[in-house]
Length: 68
Image (cartoon, rainbow, N blue to C red):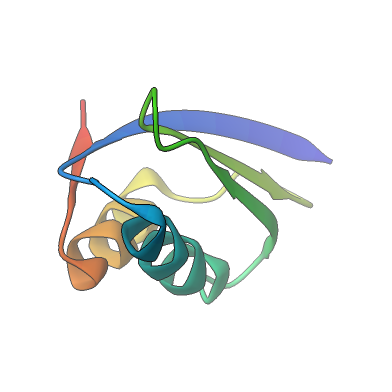
């Protein structure tokens, strides 16, 4: 299992966390998504590394920005 972590900006509440979790969870290969509202940390667990562009697109679809 692979674990990757990014930072998401613009989240202000649990609804934001749920939106990001839902969108990123639909990226092919993603098995688990954890989002920490306080730090903005987005942790993705998958069988193989997930393309950062796919994660970025999912986060932007939810209405937020991926840093880096």
